[in-house]
Amino acid sequence: MSAVIQDAPRLRVTEIFLSLQGESATVGVPTVFVRLTGCPLRCTYCDTAYAFRGGESLSLDEVVAQVAAFETPHVTVTGGEPLAQPGCPALLERLCDAGWRVSLETGGALDIGGVDARVTTVMDLKTPGSGEADRNRYA
Image (tube, rainbow, N blue to C red; front, side):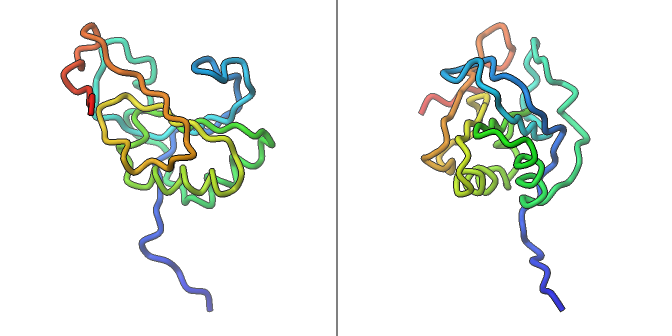
């Protein structure tokens, strides 16, 4: 009989897909995107409001298996706001341990202190026009 770990992290995932990175230092690089569900912000210009709710509940192993199927060395964890999910840091660590080059796209409103040092953090600080500028964390 196999033991089941009751507290193993699960993530709400809106989608996992392959595309070209359109932002940061790796623009143009084929990248697997893991879009986590949920965001505590409601920016006026949000282009991913479809990721606020829903998504599929996946274990870290299930996410890693789907990422591996694309056979590309770059992975970006995005959202919504990925750090709104408690299991996000564990996913980032698991992806790094498996050898991927990992980036995290975050909105700047949540603490990045628990993010693995091997992860490239891409922070989208909120402008006054977003309606959420007062949520930026500058320290």
